[in-house]
Image 1: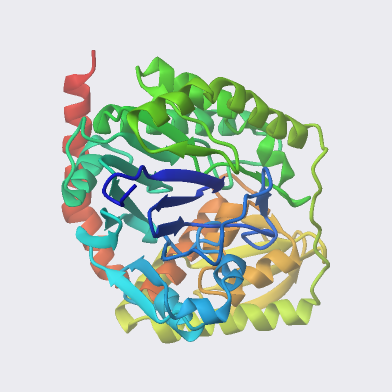
Image 2 (image 1 turned 180 degrees about the horizontal axis):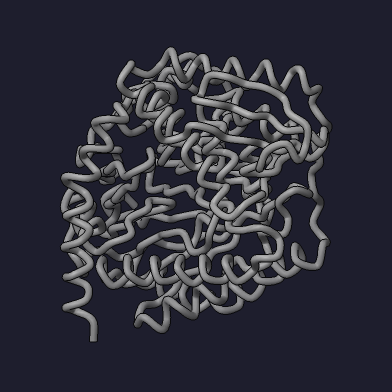
Length: 454
């Protein structure tokens, strides 16, 4: 059977990772095979399947988060194989990912522009489109089937989904399989605030349903949520995550056929293959439900962290703030100080406060001398300031509690400040764009949705 006649197959690796093969093509997407992610905050809900490192022809990564761009997975491919592979990644200003890959022996690393169609061989074409917050999605056309992978892309309106589809060159009703996230994956409230997490879980299903209604695919694959919060500081966040069977039921309610895969499951990318996978979905979802329930019963291992000396924490905070100041323009530094004149962290393992004023001055204070914004361990705070993506990690792994109502805003704001520097984006320009372009557009979108509501 020739390439033109062969049927493409998809093997699910776990979480957001899979392999698509057809003839000589062996495309690996977002593999996360081993270990923890987000500073010991996440672990895979179920062990990942392995891909054949000898057969890989192409790698595609959606974004830099470690559950998608996994360093151990990148290094699992033997050095002698790396020069001959093609790696596809979205264009970025900082070049962090592509430079890392090239520095580790990957000889053909392609930065793909939004909407750029890339021939992969074997009759397959992949188109990548960037999303907000550094994510990206792709449309894979192979063997007459169109697979749209939204993974973690935060398209929260019909207009945003339509824009992505337009850039991908696909219309509603033309996608065979839509793959998208189905549960929350970040900090949502303190231990006693389970209702906040239930609301977040419901919102995630609404988000999934909106995407499906807009894309109108033949099948929907809920994925990219097969993790659990695995540190003793964040394990409570598992109490309201969506069960796989709940996501499957919601897809059915919307009138679409769900496809749920376990690591190692393979489906044929054809109408018959997708239908067969859909027919096996209920049993697979129930089996995966059991892994979530095992977490809630306390049967999964939890990680712990040793305290960091207080003087090391203070030094790291000061170094991080210096990087922030050196990486921002004078105007952006002034705006940053206006946005966050003071932030106070309570270190639970040292019973002390770290007070930061105007993003420059750092001091240690006794408990009770001033109100804290958040409570966390010294190891979590040190990590947050060690890397420019450290506060992104803290928001995702949820290894902190609010000490006061709205205290998490301090973490969110710091995440944004470091994010502007990391992505080489101007805070002032971003602020103006949100106010003058995005806000009016979102207002029009809300009016449109209200007018279309039954």
